[in-house]
Length: 216
Image 1 (cartoon, rainbow, N blue to C red):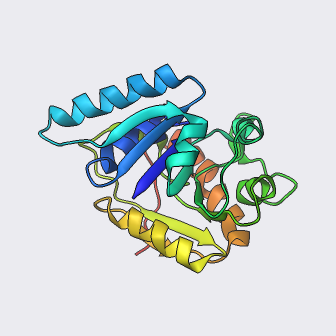
Image 2 (image 1 turned 30 degrees about the horizontal axis):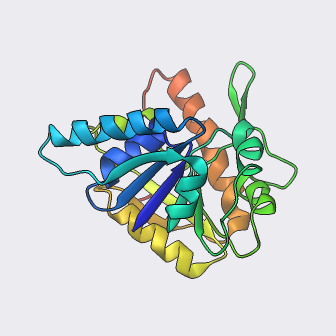
């Protein structure tokens, strides 16, 4: 599978490449292609040092969209509109949103957009045939890059496209200890997204790190 990551030079993009590029071709996209290439080179060298072959490359965001079967939007909510408005080629492709709209005023809070969720906000900007899936929202971004850390979390997955949901849940299952769970239609995304500011507040107020969710 070819996984294209828009905004792929941040913790989530680089971490996904480190954890998935031995199984799938991971294409890291960026506004600055040279930065994507540097991140890709770093990923390849890091895994080579562990005796693992990486299938990773760095390109522009548009090239990542064009080449991918599954596209991950590893973007802060405030950068979504500006980034997506300059990209084309999402027709018929699976698009994954781990985007959480949040604010902070002494504490973190869910800054719900008018559409109801980041996923529904993104849906308005994509072509009708794009297959949007909400996933990976509640994993601490920096934890992705810590290869010796176990990602022992549940991953809630929302979509109106059942086949796209199955593909993403299968991808999640490729990551050891992550458990994909069907969380319903895309309209349920606001519930999933709003968990992240709750986790950040719990971590901050109780001196904890990397607080996550696991449904048992």
